[in-house]
Length: 535
Image (cartoon, rainbow, N blue to C red; front, side, top):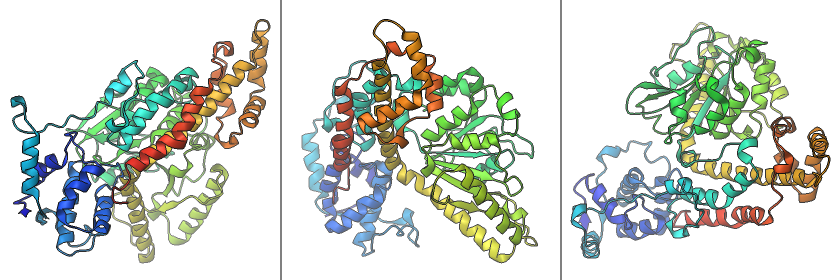
């Protein structure tokens, strides 16, 4: 029987449990090591669910420490549930658990490992070489057992199954740039959208409880650029052109919007515990009238749409005094189509109106949103004043103050849940992209088929572009595809006019079948492989 002498033991135990030295505890490795705790299967099932809170299918070192603390609490007779660390438990002072047979396992490992002298007796994590999948021109299949997490599995499936289809039918030119390694590994993102002076930058400062590099607040349109606020070793601002070419950041796709956009894009880095979990995106205020169209030197709506596809949550901020949704803001909200499940609405600065006015403002906001968000469900609206100023108690009654507090707690809970749902969101976005790419391939190959072999190609192309909506309907009927998954006719027509349809590829059924097999069999198998090992 072995009891650890302190938390420093956890690193040694982690190396011991990590039998393949990849820096991750897989389900199989966990079942062997956690068996030493003598906990019941139902306890271990709950323990894994609480430790692998992001549902990645493995435990890194921080999650392993959490698991060991949960083992210790379970051995002390405490019930394992999601609220266990919210109670009076002091995580820092939890003693390491008792693990039976640990000494024998150490001795066994010592015999197996004939350690080369350069490793100094410590098994070094190898790390999974996913970078080569994206850098190599070869499309050799990698064995399933070399995949050590759900995200790694998605990377493999993308390279082997989905990327060939996207490249063949120019999906990156029409819909979305090809994915890179960093797109899969990036932290969850939250984007804030709204008209100017609705409190977007102040909201971020309120969340961080401090300023971030380059933050500027004022009643006029102050944020004139897209600012990505993310974790970093020190406080600094990085210009857009530098971020776009940084292979370690997921923003290379923004180069398609040109230098005029990149000059209005920056990254603000700073060390902060919240930014270790999520990345925040501050946006320029949506202007009204002709200013939005004439004073932007880049495709503002296109950039918002690009970020919307990458983000895990989109916050639309409104001010009680600026409830009118301008045509430009309506166009921006319309560009979020397909990401409706990510949208949350925030009625900010609600302490600037009294209770009766607040009720009228809320009703007016819901009415305005109903005309823009074409969904049958009612949007979730958070009401509050998300800044660090004390509330005006003369204007805000105790009942409304209590409402604001509850609303703020609900919104914070929504934000805290983002990292936990990040892996599920990645899977969801990947499946959505695969279906979109499949429909795109059918459209492109159908247009190619409609072109004449020799004469009259220019006229045929113009006829196809003019009657694009009819062609979409033909594709939909022929292949029994859902109409709601088809791209915007206007956008597709605009991009298509710059290409020669005759140069497109014909339909390759094997490629389509490979994507169908991936959606029908391989992704479910991947999820099954990395589910809770005690299920």
